[in-house]
Image (cartoon, rainbow, N blue to C red):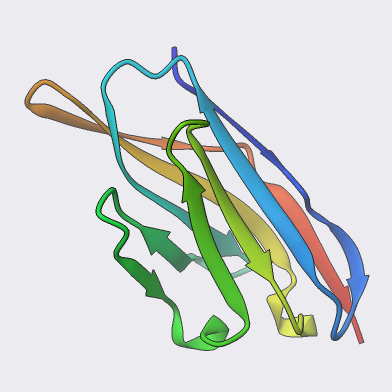
Length: 119
């Protein structure tokens, strides 16, 4: 059973930084893409950043230049360094991991971690 455990959320002021972590356990197969999504109240879940097994990174326009995604392959962990946080970054942040087992791919979600940025 694959489990994703997230940590690092909290309440901060505008301009502050936070670092989110997400570790996958129980993995049988190969972890491909890892990423972060966020969902603000009353809104849809949107992509924040992804990183694939080749190291290719993709960011949402809203976070480019402020957020940085990275991964530790040995620890099955993905990080999201968030700098210069803005009130509009307030959301529940979800980790997403794609795992390939044989010829099939599976997507898993973390439980979410709240990030609140006050002005």
